Length: 459
Image: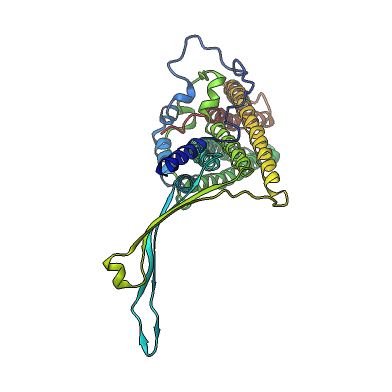
């Protein structure tokens, strides 16, 4: 008898190695040989841009301290970390379904019927082992899905980390751009106030018409309005950064000026194929596909019967005294096959739904990969063109500055009208503000390129 039981158990264990449903395989995607608008480097780089740690890319010490604080205190980071813990616990719960469960039992009866008093009786006590054999791999596929969900959650956490680093850097550069515009606007205001003072003296002396004074006064008012608007923008940007840092709104320290921020003129971007492994959102999307793929196996296993096994070992007696003296040993082994015959199409539709969800997850993965290549291409052209645009604006600003100086000299010498002075000064000041904005655009594209390449999330 023991021989047949052992043989039966062995056969059941061998059968439990079967796993239905498709095994996961990464879908083939179209990968370009090189990024569009990638710079041509004169010598091979020591490392790709995305492989550099974020403190190497962003070298302003104040910005580095802000990013460190954000990575510690930001609520999105902390929520993402908590979701990883939840996914890990869920994996443990799902994986437990593959293992047998052991429970103890005891049944004690006490009955008193006056005037007769009876002793407590113990009907039975012992251990019971229950196990649903995973014949078709339903629980193994479910564990596979839970493990992929855990990995997806971890990559989602890395995406949050990368996004946070990029947001803090971009908002800090925006704040420094507003600071630079404020410096220019305050200098413009002082220059316009001086022009108004000189013009007022000239009008009072009967040398210049009143229109010159009014025009000079308009320039002062425009500069004052610009400063008021910048004060609002600076305060709001500081509030945005404070929230990213996990603080209440408040002041933000400053480091290097906008034009002093170190950044690489030519960025080594590496091969596009590396993006499939480096971008955390791409990896997150792929693990979501792996989850959906495993769920197809879970749904398919429902078409086959379940084989639950139970075994118990214990003792039985009619009274507490006889139980202590030597109860009768009782054991049992049972197995059955349970298969649903009719559920109104629930199993079939669940299986079809799992396949549809898998197809949707694959489409989402392909879309994410394509979007990643597009992000890099857009950031590359944005960085190179914004850098070239900023250089041209600097040349233009220098030209306007010289034109304004010459117009002012000509006006004092009586060779031109005050209108020419106002026009050239306004062109110079406008170009100076635009240059500050161009600096921010260049650094913003620099940050976006680092993010698009998947850099910065590594611990």
